[in-house]
Structures are given as C-alpha cells and as structure tokens.
Image (cartoon, rainbow, N blue to C red; front, side, top):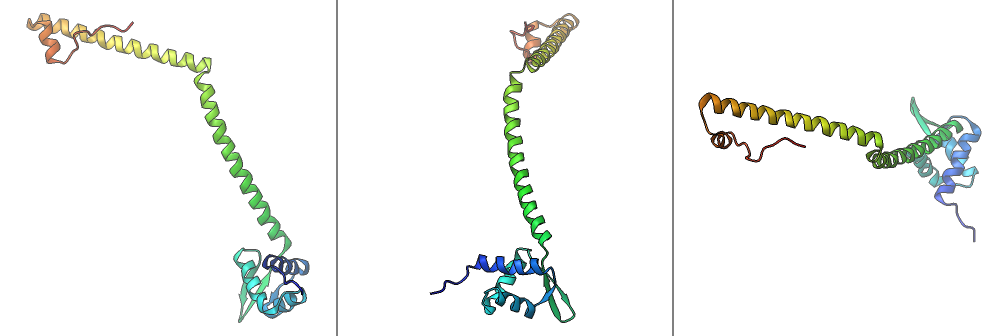
Length: 166
C-alpha cells in the first residue's frame, strides 16, 4: 500500500516548484505542475490556497485570469523576519530582567544612598524651617493679640509636642 503525501509535504513540493521555476503561472499550469510532483490534482487548489493564506505565494488578477508566483527570496525574507522578531522578543525580555536586577543593585549603590541621604537632609531642613516659621507666627500672635499659646495651638491645629527634627 502506498502512503499519500502529508499536507505539509504537498505544500513544500508545490512551493519548491514555484521557487525552482522562478516564473509566473495560471491555475491550470499550477495544477499541472503540482500533479507532476505527486500532488493529486483535486488537492492542488487547497494546497495553493494554503500557501496564499500564509503569504508564501502571491497572486494577481490580470484581465480574467489569476496568476501565481513565489520567488525564493520572499520565503527567505519571511523566515529571516520571524527569526529576527523572536530575537527581539528574547532581547526585550532580557532587558526587562536586567532592569529589575539593576533596580535591586541601584538601591544599594553608595552614590544612590548618598543621594537619598542628601535628599533627607534637604527635607529635614525644610521641615525645621517650617517649624521655625510656626514658632515665629505663634510668638507674634501671642504678643500682638495677647492670646494664650494653648489657644493658638488649638485654633490652628498645632500639635502641643511640635519641635525641631534632629
């Protein structure tokens, strides 16, 4: 018993016919070419449509006829593009992983720690400046309006334990 060709084998054989001939064919010529390569003539159109769907064979309508062709460079470009897209995807994943790793190391970097210390000192100085301003305004209001300090604190929601940050 003779085993028939798989669909992928039929696709490969028909595509090879196009690539080897480097020519343009109408549907009758494609069917003849496929049958010469062992593809049952009734399935050639299905195989051809599959190749068209995967953009491995091109078609153009001229007048009342459709013409089909595929040149070896097109498949090579398509396979090269797929390989390059996969490389890009892998590299983007690697970049993402390296950025995460970098953030871990950056948090422990002496320069980063110094910068955070400097920023903390700036924030502390700013907080003490505002505290000093509150003390000055409270003193001024106490002297100007002869009001108790506790009354000012209550009215302006100033905590009783407000003090400079050390």
